View 1 (tube, helix red, strand yellow):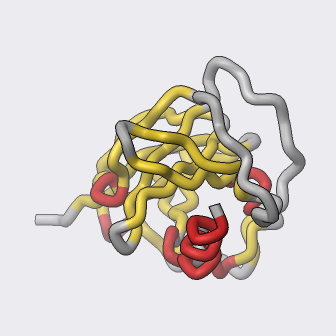
View 2 (cartoon, helix red, strand yellow):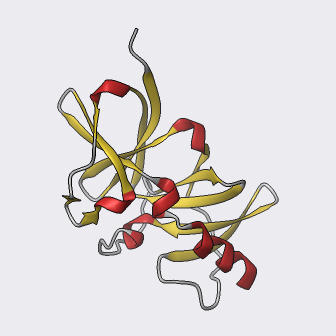
Length: 151
């Protein structure tokens, strides 16, 4: 019996990325984000999500892609890392998939211009190529905690 990993698939630019469902606490429509002084460029600010002050990170910016205007399909994927909620702005959140664990390959050195340190692997599902994000590295927690202290 092969093991499956349940992931949320989201889009940035023309690529599909995936993060494990068990790290996701919700997917929200874009809402008002309060800017935080002196925050690093990819930290857009904070939102009050059901009484929890949640830092918001623009993944496009974090991964070095050009910024685009947010639109109707823009979503905030709320993830929990080390007991801290962080919101990730993505172009769209597509669906939830089960990926057979054996279909996940180690990451190539570079995927587009996303450096391999943010990637935990790639999975080919039918004609789709999903890039699995290593949230711990992509969201270096010291940065997020420091941002919360300043805010």
